[in-house]
Image 1 (cartoon, rainbow, N blue to C red):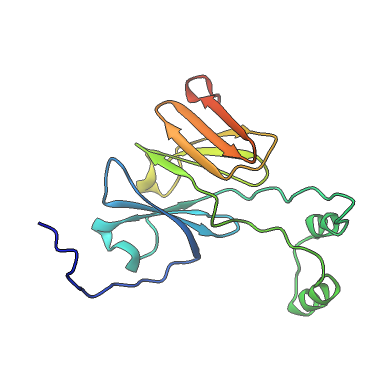
Image 2: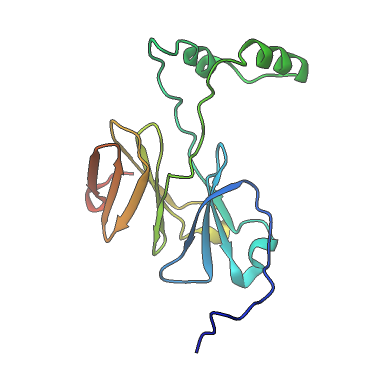
Length: 183
């Protein structure tokens, strides 16, 4: 019987980004998927049999979303999206001071949520992209296959339901069948 009043020591581990979501794998509870606010690798898998969170992720992958398009209310977004990578710290500081009032597009949100099932992980992004990764080849530290779907609006929640992918954001709900998907 579970004693809800029992107090035990809590274990805290730092991970490589701000945690936005945690998923316990439905078929293997020893695999934990953590969604983090990272520019390129938003999904980190930890294998609790291999040291858990005290080690580097067993597998990490993600997608760099396209920055939002500028509208008349925020003309500076084009300059941010088109700006090349900065080569030195001095020029980075100069660019930061010039564009400090311009909004910077975020790479993630605590409200964005993916889904895992079998060897698949699905996640939507702010640019309307929905990606499904097949990570069966995780021992080689790579994703076996990646499917990409596109919606006209931001995606905040993605669900794997059998062979279907369901995504929603705003006032729309979108369904795709992976049976007809081409990689």
